[in-house]
Each structure stands twice: as C-alpha cells, then as structure tokens.
Image (tube, rainbow, N blue to C red; front, side, top):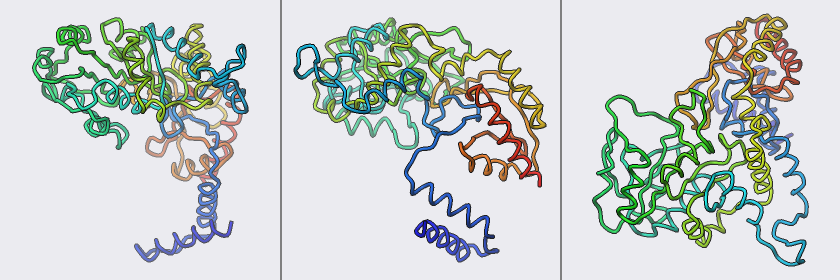
Length: 418
C-alpha cells in the first residue's frame, strides 16, 4: 500500500513539474493509488465486455466455453498429460490433441504450438531452413505492432523472396526463382486492399507449387474451421476451405474464431506436420497442459457441431430478436434508447466486416467520468463511447448479468450527470 501511494504521488509531482497546472484533488490521488495497487496485485480480473468487439484482444480474446474451463480445472493439478494409465508408463502429450485437431480440420495430421506467430516460425524453420520462400508483396503484414512478416522470416532462417506488387499479384509471379523451399500465402487479417487489385486463388497457387514440387503453406489467420454462410464472413478463409483448395499446410490461431485458448495450429500433409513436430523449435513452442486441455474441449465442441457452446459463436450468432428485447429492458431501466448499431468480430478477424445489432445509447454529461466509474467497479465494465453518449452492446454480455449491468451503468450515469 505504501509503495503504491508513493508511486501515485511521485507521478503527480512529475506531472506538475512537466506541465504545471493545478495539483490533483484527493479523489484523483486515491484513484491513482487504486490503479497502482491493481498493477502491483498481478491478478487478472473478470471484465464485462459490452464494447461491441467479440474477440477483444485487450480483454483476452476468446472467452473459454464452460467445458473448456472445466477441462482446465481438471488439468490444473496432477494429470495424465504424458502418462499412459493403461500401460503404466510414459505416454505422448499429443495423444489426445493431435487426432482431434486433424479430424476437426479435415487434415491428415496436426500439431499445436503456443501462438500463431510461433506456428509460422516453426513451419518456416522446419520446411525452409535457409532457402527461399515466395511471398506476395501485398501480404508482407504487420500485426499488433510487433509481428512483421519479414522479421519473422529472418528469425526463422528462411530467405524472403518478394513477388508481385502491393495491389496486384498473379500466379505466374510465383514461377521464377531459384532454391525455393515453399510458397507462402498470408491472409491480411487486419486490413483490406481495395480498388485495382488482383490475387491468385489458392487453387492457382497450389498448381504452381505442384509444378515446382514445393509445398504451399497458407496462414489463414482467424481459425475459422469451415466456410460459413454469414455475409459478414464473406472472404474470410477457412482451414478446411484452404486444404480442399490445395494448400499443403494451413496455419491459424486457436483463440479467435476457433473460440479456444491462445494457440497456433498447423494442419495438413502428414509429412509436413511431422517435419514441424521433429524440429527442435517444436519443444520450445509447445503448449502447456492447461492450454492442451482447453483446446481439446474446444475442438470437441466443434466436432459435436455445438457452436452455441462456444462464447464467441454464441455472441456472433445471437438471436437479434432476443437481443433487442434485452436492450429494450436495459434502456428502460437506465434512461437510454435502443438504436441500430454494429458489432465487429475483432482480433484481426474479418477486417471491415460488421454484424448489425441493437445497442443501448445513453447520453451523459461526461462520458470520461462514466467510463472511469464503470472500469473502477467489480467487475469492471467496458463500453464504447460516441461523443457524449455511452453505447452498450449486449452481444458479449451473458443474459444473467443484465441486472448487474443495469445497476452499475445507472450508478455511473448518476455520477457523470452530477
């Protein structure tokens, strides 16, 4: 407590010395001390997400399903992670996960590592190792401010060979080049190039790869397992779709549209997966028991075709009529109005796509004060702001939390309007 108070007071003094102005009042200092205590506690807190972003990177991306949480709890103590109970000897830590992964993706084989960037590094290191990798200039992505494809390729030991242009790349652009280990396609998950553009299909790239006798590796990004009919997912590549079109190895995330824990999945040809599994980096990038447990449970939900069991899909496919009814009840309690809004998938998924949804709009005198009050409560609540109006999106809020949400927002509005 003393250290947190000193930290807050030192920060206040530094602000006064740097930009002058009035000294902070006692409530402001207390708020700074509370924030410093939260930082020092090191404990993650449950947050109610009413911000209209389903896969919210700042809020931990995909919330785990109830079966996944139960699986994590069961694996938290001693468990048979690498122990064959039937034979009484050491077992294979991938014995449960690998077959499920292959089955869910419609692939010959699969392996999972700690995140999508790790999956790409492993694939490049195992399959390219100092040789050339052909990549369109329009796919040299940067994600999250630190994942830059050229740097990732350099770190893996692969040699980047750029082809095409930023906006137009043809299949023929992948035909020249010496000492090429593979063709790499990267889905631009967090941006779109529009206008005068051209991109070869996966089938066209697969034909070039076959003619060169090298594999086609496709990083599809979001973890969408199969093509979906929803219009907002138009153009979002799926794992099964990529494999069916001729990709030899497909990479994706486990914590986006798959709806599971942070993970990077590699699925496809058995020989390519085995090469990745046998590479020394595979051990450095492997999953721990808790994420294996959560990922197995998540894949089982997909295999049961029970998407409603996964919070991400429960939110994205929520009944709009029921959502509107919930919004109307909330608006009545907090003095707001129901208006048409949008939810986004988030997390670098379906860039630019929006899901139409009703939201509650609430005018306030100070949106900053109301937002701070909501974040300061237990649990913290995150909404979004449009000018001096709070916008509350219930897609990602469990229905059983509506009463708590109404009470907390009502209290925050009262403070903001004072």
